[in-house]
Length: 95
Image (cartoon, rainbow, N blue to C red):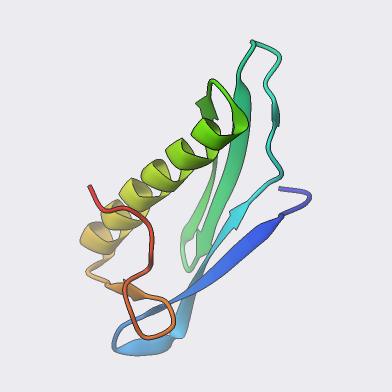
């Protein structure tokens, strides 16, 4: 991801030195009459680059949040981790 317009650094409960970063790219038309919201999740052993799409920019952003929440839940289960942000939950919708 070349440019991010938003970034959130998540820490792992019990291991605050282990950090994961969620980045969102600027929303853009997808060329298919939809909008695209590219996102990235990076952390130890993890580098995910994907995109979510919507009928407009707001829906693409909403979809990205939902998909990111699912990605984070999968990482938490697979790695036995629990993410937090600012002392609370990571802030993305959970499946």
